[in-house]
Image 1 (tube, rainbow, N blue to C red):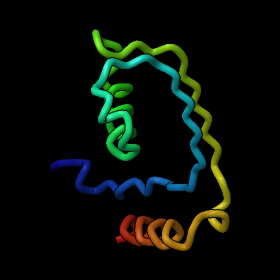
Image 2 (cartoon, helix red, strand yellow):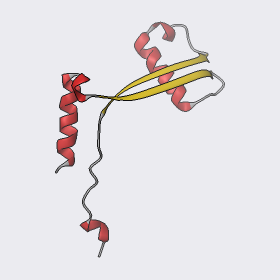
Image 3 (tube, one colour):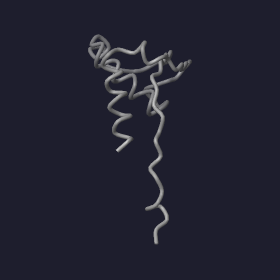
Length: 90
């Protein structure tokens, strides 16, 4: 008999976090892309996720993470947090 069938699901604790990421790198890219902020941000996140290559050179990165009180989160985030917790209780 499978013993995992008798185990209760683990209830992961979720919280609200404030994250700050500072990145500095050099990138070779089309000039037109660099003027569209939304497209640029997506491109930069992808470049950092894939790491250095012939077109991207990382120079510096800093990441800070701090858990904040739920009451400091937006109403939308608090509702999502409640949904996540309710889904884990089922």
